[in-house]
Length: 232
Image (cartoon, rainbow, N blue to C red):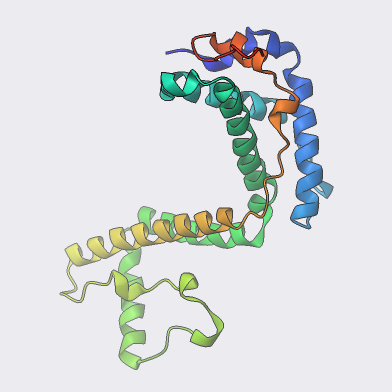
């Protein structure tokens, strides 16, 4: 299988890639700070080497997708391959940097990590589910409301009753409940993450076409993957 990172390093693009990566990042950062009304860069820096690696990695992913996954009829359209690569790099960098510098430093991620910690604890300590079910049975028996429903939305509630087995207090029941609870928590985390990513207001990464030319793409993957009849 082709090593697309090596293809990039061996191409003429390699000499300008560090400068391009840093310029793209600076444009993204200046827009993101305004859009999300937060400046995580006051307390943390973005090492230039990491930024260059990010750009090279997403460019390699874009070339791999173009070469291995996209049909010839698409790639025969003048300008299609170039637009695809630029759009892929722009979107993937936007998600990666938002995730690392904004979402990754938010209260939301800290709360989600607590849920993840609970799932890992259940995985590492099989006996823990018995204590959880014992507490659950006590609360249910007292008829206590699990939460003040006026102050929370459905998406914030983890319904233990969704996975509780009302059968015997057997070891099999405990193991089944533990496995289902871990799955439930992890699915909840995925849903929350997707919802948060969908709430991203704007794409802040700049147009990669400002820095990467059609000729650059052609030289990296060859004319069989880039239609250049209109010139690059």
